[in-house]
Image (cartoon, rainbow, N blue to C red; front, side, top):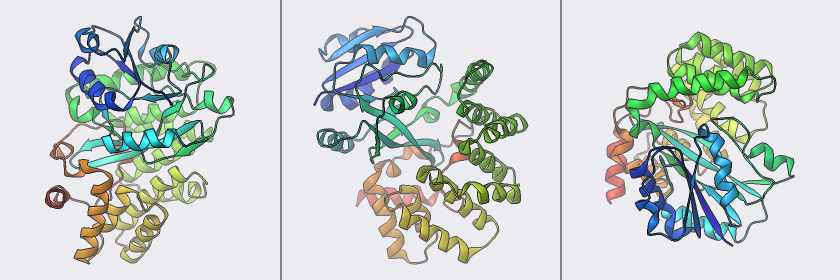
Length: 366
């Protein structure tokens, strides 16, 4: 089994070098597509690496260029602001030699600063197939539809991607949001476009505090049967203090059979219970969610902050650390004031506070 790592970079020489170092030992080939100035010295000494000029294609439209050049049996897509732990890369090699699926859905931790994160699911690992290509969206492009059209099957695996965009690009955050809004606005004005783009546009607008426009986009997405758009609306309403309206939406979409969506619904339901001082129901909700998602870092941490048993709290935090050592990394506790795309999707309950940093640091050190 041959594995090709695919990287798209935009004037990110320093981070590109670190990204290559992150995966180099565990892949058989690396294809780098660059849009902008490129430092050839990064790749010249590594015969695994192919460099492709992005021809100034707009953002994600350049992603198909690395698929065109990839020779591996499997594709691993990683961006320059992401990292994967070595133990997960070792695990991935074993998995790909023993799986009959066509693509892996994996968790990504989008670090928001101040010790919080949003866990989302991404499609970054899939079989190399000439019929599998990204859609035409310039941002948030995906191969999901292409794989579905080719009757591909998916499997979830705990191979964690760690996304540090906001922590390393805080000063560029607003300009990035504005750029994405402009691109998404163009896309949704085309006759045929993905319903999900309304949800993504709403998230971008919410990150710039344009709440009324964000809610409009979520409503459009919801009217077109996007449950994600409905959830995002409920999450934003919660942050705006509209708890009853948020709960009404949750009461409808909680009937979904989408396990990933349910996870996020449960976080919001638990936060509403926390905010309304319904302690018994909150305890039951978190206990239920932890049983359903036993390896979820955020449910282990959330449960740790609700228990009065010191030993149980320690055990839950230790379990989280074994899955994600970044919990002991001071970098994720960086004080960030800006909001990014994922801020309303944060995975921790509001009762989790800054003491988490010290507890994780002390436990990890021992």
